[in-house]
Image (tube, rainbow, N blue to C red; front, side, top):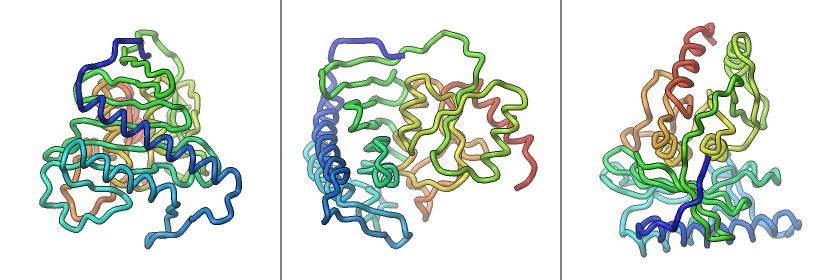
Length: 283
């Protein structure tokens, strides 16, 4: 749950929420243009065949300029160039539109993912949800904050002490693969399960709101998909773990692709998820 608080005085928090509020406005305008059927709305395929829209590119351009006015650091963005990234010890990690497929399918479950990475660990993160006028933001090991861009009100995360008998699983809108189904069936054999279908990093926001306990993903993501969510979840006692049980680190490999992961809000869900994973047959 989130409780109302006075506005923070930390300048980085204030600066980032300001520029993300502006970026939200850009994305909302682009989404409305797309929903209205704007004939020249640009959608292209990248080299990996994933889609990119004019909305991705406009937010990327805006945030590259705006972030440079806050901290003059390199920016590792999904839509940018990053050939010399392995020399960077501290940098911004950005996905200007996480959930491009959700955007294209006219679902408002897309986000802006932004994080600050220092020596392989995410130390500051924000996930902005334009269509909900909300930004989740905070430093590693401090309770995350929620900022409402319409009312300008601030809220701080507080753990919910209620005991839930139902396991809430976050899953994709798209059809699940075999490993997803086996994982779900194994948990359902022992627990009452509620499925929450949502897009991309938006599921991390639902975890902060107490609506998802475990989010399993058995196909690849990229580092800009997980960094912000991992930081915010670690700050409430959870995290994102590779399928071998290790927490993700950033900008340490030749590839920016992550393998599958398990995201959890609490250690008890981590234990349950990995015990379930260990019980599955080889796929």
